[in-house]
Image (cartoon, rainbow, N blue to C red; front, side, top):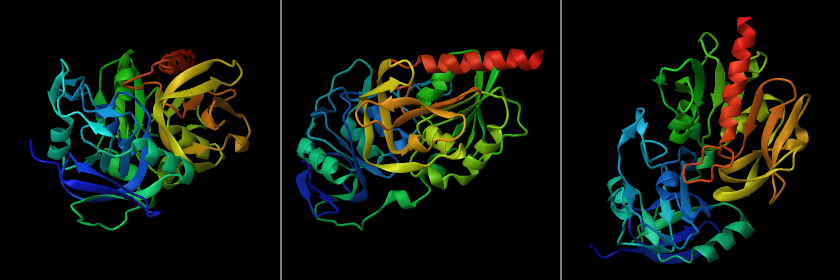
Length: 364
């Protein structure tokens, strides 16, 4: 084993944390955010919604079950959320150099090094998280061996355009055609849709789908400020005038919110965990959800026939919206969460049922 190099995490307010490098030995800058999940680091690292961010994992032991195999199923990697690592860097407390799992084929450190992603361990991540909770998300740097880099703010870039596909991809051969607008889609969304009798047509974020044949429209998750996705919002505004069911997740919820006439805002430090409680408006049912977002819809400014669907029980922010009469709804959290929980996976069935009902109505 190569001796770890000295490394520092430097925040824009001047706070520094010292540790050691266990990933690729290069310095990097980005936005520092934290995740409270106990498991699922391979899924989190490959989630396109983390594009441009330095991820802090608050769980104290990372790397103990290694990294799973790269086998494919239904045309996509079976154990990851995309085909690459999207975080800019990783910050953890204790790294397990020894790993053990029946499906592991690599160590976390080696996987990061192979993908040229820097990482640092030996950091008091609880103290760091306290700084981020009090000050909000901040720009930061992982500096290896005092090789400094310039500050970098990913929020100034069109991150969705960077992570979305460029050409149409089709999965499955089912009866119902789902138009999936890829704003940085997680693979488990595709898997969840393919669990039904569907054909999933994955298209770029700004794709004009009005001349295409489809039964339901799905707007995916993705990174960055939703206001930058003007073409996707314009397309949604036109699609919402029709009768076809629409389902949005995470960034998809924000885009639907803007298209409906509401506003979005940046959260102080975001929601990134596998244990966020939300309540369903009207039923008072509580669900435990997985989340990864830095922006939210201002549900106090929903207009016309739009209603809040779910609310966050920690801070009362909007966790979903729905239309009073049309088959359109969205969630800020991830019903498809890979790594769990799957309490709200039934929402995919709701979407498919709406498609079936609408298809039968249109055929009469």
